[in-house]
Length: 168
Image (cartoon, rainbow, N blue to C red; front, side, top):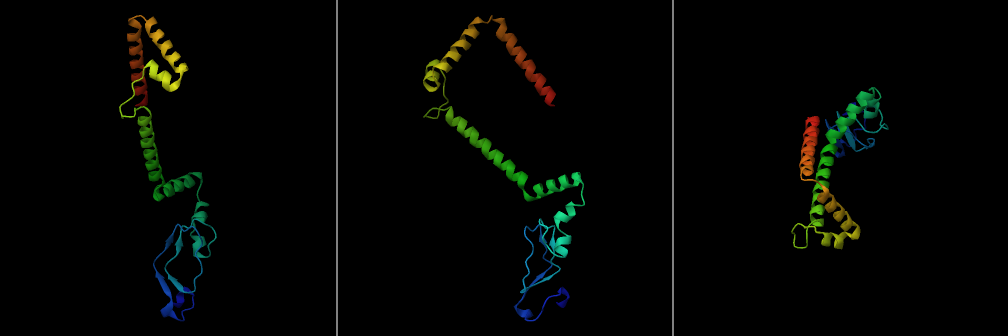
């Protein structure tokens, strides 16, 4: 036990760490007189305040050896290994579900049925400005010839097909 360079008197009262490395430690390893570390280094420390082997094997020192591409790869590794990307995906899923729930609540009546919008209830809910928009749209619909809505639908379909083909 003297090979650790520590005082081994009262050995029966000391803790022995045998082959138990610290990985990605956030703070420097403290000096504890009651603990004997045997083959238990601090590896890839996320700080640069360690001493001896802890400083030599710190992540900050290793990153100095990498170029910009190496830094990015290490960052990606740490993010993936720590589960940040999975947690972010879960948060996005929860937020999307909450937004859908809020939209459902907003556009459903008190009895849970989807709202049916008429000029009257839109005016009641959103004011006379929205009623005017509906009336303008109705006037536009009446001004179209019978062929124009069909052509508009064809153009919309062509646009969707074009957009879908571009995304592949």
